[in-house]
Structures are given as C-alpha cells and as structure tokens.
Image 1 (cartoon, rainbow, N blue to C red):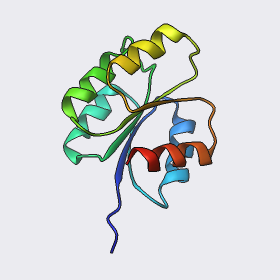
Image 2 (image 1 turned 30 degrees about the horizontal axis):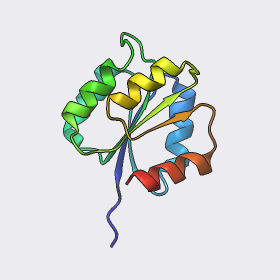
Image 3 (image 1 turned 180 degrees about the horizontal axis):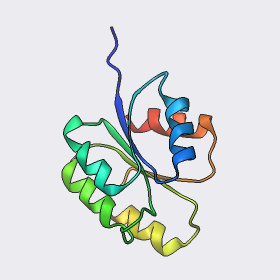
Image 4 (image 1 turned 120 degrees about the horizontal axis):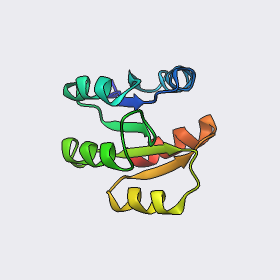
Length: 118
C-alpha cells in the first residue's frame, strides 16, 4: 500500500479552502486551518507539505512562513498569493519557501506543484 502524504492547508477564505480540500483529498490526507492559530494546533499532526496563504489575519509579510520553516525543517512550503508585489515575493523566496503559486490557479497547476515538491 502506498503512503498517502498529509497536506496542511492554511487558508482564511473558507470557500477556497473547501475547494482545495475537495481537489486534493482524493490523493492526499488533508488538514485545514482558517487562521495561524488553528494551524499551530495542527503542527503536531506532522504534515508532509504546507500550503499556506500569504495574507492571513494578524500576520505581517513572511512572519508565519518563517515560523513554518523553523517548525518544519526540510518540509516543502508552498505559498499562495494574489499579490503581484515583487518585494513580497522576494522576501518570501529568501525565507526559504519551496514555491509560490498565484491565485487563481487551476487544479492541474496545484497538483503539479505539489507532486514536484514532494
């Protein structure tokens, strides 16, 4: 039996979080959080990959990404954003994330990126 990877999705837009869960739950075990606080409660679940929105309530810039990098050393982190600002992208890439995907994205795009990251 093949091992199913566990993905933590951190997304404050409930509809998008639900859509992503539906897209991914056929191939992966999905954990979801709508806030940084909820995500922290799931850290002990040891996800294999973290898929997180960049802009979350109460978080500035790459602050949460840095926390994820410290908590999940050597785990892929994919940031989702609709932000075009290059300075934010540069800050995130320097923080050590695996990739950034711009919203809106297709099912094929996110599945490809997850497969490449795992």
